[in-house]
Length: 392
Image (cartoon, rainbow, N blue to C red; front, side, top):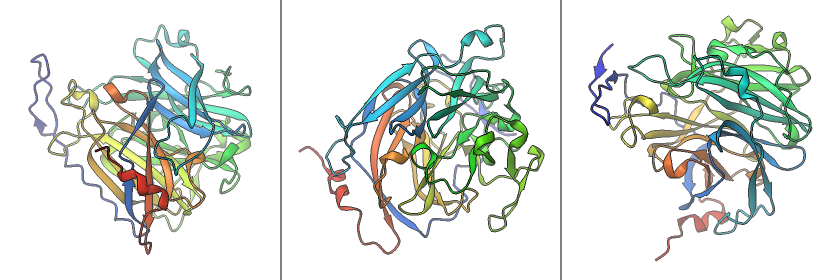
């Protein structure tokens, strides 16, 4: 494997594998033709990751990583007025931490292989919160230093996140390429779901069979009856090689990718936008200035903090996924984990809010509005007229 020469901030050797340039292989969308982002972003809370679910109590619940003196905690967002027609979104919602430590860290105190515990996915089903948790280290390969997801499991809360049963599943409920579980989001309390299943995406590396927080190769797709989410043998995995003929298998070894982007697939979140009848996914991973994949911890800040944002849509959770937006220098210091809260979408599905996080100034709950223009439409929704506002 060819390596690219690189010197770290302190003069140390930080050479990294020279993978092909980050060019998305998917076709361009023929359904969403254009995206317009608001000129402004708004920051609240503290931390990163931010898996989000719209709960039965009408609040948004979010998992955050690595803040407030803990590797993971839980936050609640209350929306006082959803007003996408306003110039800003400040004052319309508030975010508060409600659980400083959903999982006792003492469980991992003796395991030196583990360096962090992070939230992967979060889902509310009729008032019960399911939080998928993953343990990580900061990389096993000095030439491609990705955060390695070692294993994952699911904890459950029946009191709005104030307490969690961390024994709801074994700590190795998911492992290998399934170590990071990200639930597909529908409407409030899982209303509007396509059927009686819960769906989840799993980022993985196809070459070594492991899962990483950044720069994977693909996403796998699993599903489980929503009343059996805590039973490992009830899960099955998408096993077809063509989206037009979906098939499922209870054997993990049969799982086939539903999305591929070589060394550029992130730990992505997927939501359903009922207004446009499409599944939306924000993808991220990190690159160098020549568009070669390079994990965020491959070098110190700010040189390593360049991320690529790509947005995709699909008619089904298993695809086919098509590209409708790309930004090769996203955020201020390399942002990551884009997400679209289903509560914060207009009824026609064309105006939505993107939540993300990033390094330094963006290491918090970052919110930015965006508008979609579909094929055959001449303009964006009228609320988007303020997106181009600039103070003179």
